[in-house]
Length: 256
Image 1 (cartoon, helix red, strand yellow):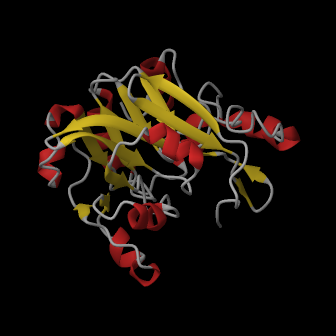
Image 2: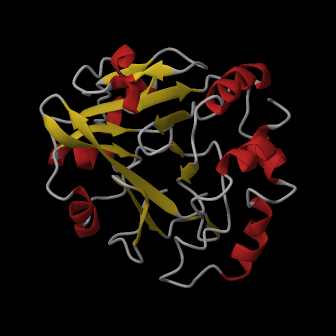
């Protein structure tokens, strides 16, 4: 599994001030059209403005434009499988620190992926400074929850200033219309994938397939719901910009 090279059909969205989303086509096994997305959050650090990059795509001119010359301070792997382009970004920005859940660095050591900050606490809200991010000027800007009960050890990021929640596989919102809006290649598979829309009846069941411990998931989901997010940016599918909390509740109401 890898990203297409070169990336094509990149779509930029700015769901909130200082939050940039770059989406593109991403297909598994040539059939399952999930789409992919990187999120860049511009924030204030003790050394000045910088960027927090989540689930990066292979570096492109669009990434460079989105950064606007800012130094990359942190690169986050939002779970145990969303890390394919992180090594490339680390080589481009060697001063950036890589963040991931406990075990990711060990799992990918043979590929040269070094995790500088490992999140070892699960299912509760963690502040930036608790994780060793001492240079974030206002620690309330970033909050994190790592889910021990998720098969991929999902690591969700909440940016309080923008009220944006960023997830990887915790929520899917398919078909990925926006990520395929340039290539126009969603087709019949995209129609089938519509059953995984956040508004579809099947969504809670499909989401639950990635739970390995439902009781542990309850703790993290309830903690996440206390945060004041107004928009949800996910790696696979369209950004939720309207009624995000209500849709989150509908997906996870069995756990809330």
